[in-house]
Length: 301
Image 1 (cartoon, one colour):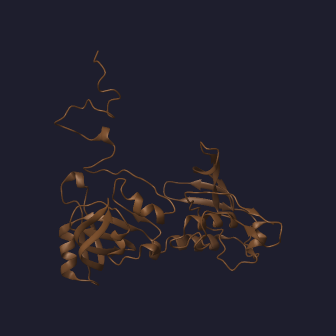
Image 2 (tube, rainbow, N blue to C red):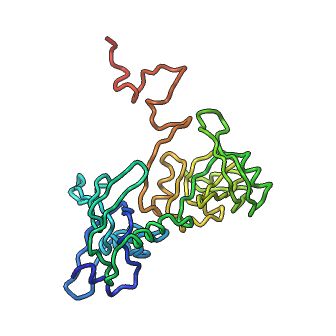
């Protein structure tokens, strides 16, 4: 049975105009011989089969990938264990015949005569609708704990519901980066925000939840990294309704956030504390250390 025939018996959202949002796990599905039955074996059941759904779990992505055509998809590769896996760096067309990437845009050429499961043409309007769902402000990111006691004080004084111009960050010199000048709305306040991490409560002092153009930011009074979702939920912020959560942490966030994440992407940005240890511009100590130097104990010629 073809997956398009399976879709005719469903009332789920029809995909097709969407960019791929690949999960961390990809697994093939096989249809049974019995008509209009698709059997997908997964570690746990999907919470929905809408690939754009807020809070969609990995099993939900697995079902979506096997049911729906996409505008473009990923090529496949084999991991060291011999398991087929998607290659996030290589794309292939599905409903698009061609894709041209510019500096600030991507142009797709749609396949001729492509239709949804009910015969409706896949056209520019369908693509625009699906991309619009991705850009919905209600589905935009929530952001880490940002240490800024001054901004927290302003928000505490203004109160929940206040809307005003606020300068965030950039308080400790060039290594802190430039401040952000935003127009924010205060969405929540907490007199003693706490989260659980490293086997103990981590108290972050007074805190404020602010929103700017659909991006939600948690500001804290005490410097501490993100350990668990309680950082957001204890502010009243509905983390399950967000598509992306950006946490400022080293590695300790994984225990709390991995169970609710479809995928984890790790980045390194500029700042006073870098995990790129060879790049730290030490001025007092010798630069003859690993990993800056492969063998710091080697005899100097």
